[in-house]
Each structure stands twice: as C-alpha cells, then as structure tokens.
Image 1 (cartoon, rainbow, N blue to C red):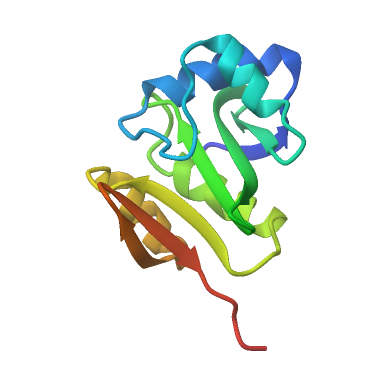
Image 2: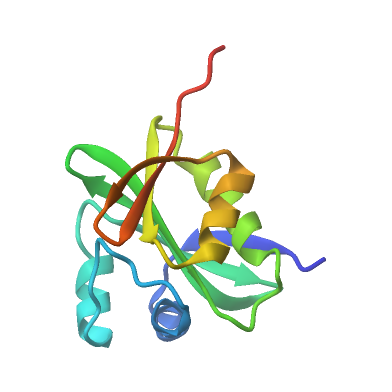
Length: 142
C-alpha cells in the first residue's frame, strides 16, 4: 500500500495540485478555478488551509479546509491515476487535522466515488443543495 501524507501546499506543489483539482470527475461546488491563477488566489485566501496530498513522494492532489457560512468545510481532489485508497487515506488525515465538529463536505450529486469515500470515514448526508449533496461529520459523544 502506498504511503499517503499531507503537507502544507508549497509553490512547487501547485501545478500538480491544480491539475488534480481539474482532472477529477467531481466539481468543487464551493470553488471555481478558471485557471491556475484563480486556483492560486483561492489557496492564498486567509481562511483556506490547503495541503498537498503526497503519495510516495509525488504530489497527487490537494486537500483543503475553509469557512463556508460560519461552518468548517473540507474539500479533496485526487488525481485519477492515484492508488484506489489514496482518497480515503487523505480524507482520514484531513479530518484528523481538522478537529472542529461538525465538519462539512459538499460534492456533486453525481460523484458516486466521493459519496463512498465520505461514508467510509463516517460522513452522513446532511442536505441537498440543487445538484450537490452536503455531508456532515457530526460530533462524537465522549
């Protein structure tokens, strides 16, 4: 099994991270990247915490967390060429870094692989927003 890690997004990671955000089947409903500059502008916003997803030393995607309507929301994009479990492992790492609960994710309703990955981690459907589905990782009882 390949080793997956998250690291702060570096300048040298941005090309691969942008490519992964454009290559997947799922659009990020909360963001629109018309080009590399709009991707850079988004990742440089003060409320966005962006990480490179690294598989065995190679950047294969981007994971991010940000504020949306006073809620903490995460996003994930992984290259279609990545290992089948890369998305699940990256999402586990991201949810560990983002301790705030509830934690939200919004994906296209037609993106079945992403629905499956979120469910594996414990996210549940919260509501539908047009063609998008908003998931929530609820707080746990301690």
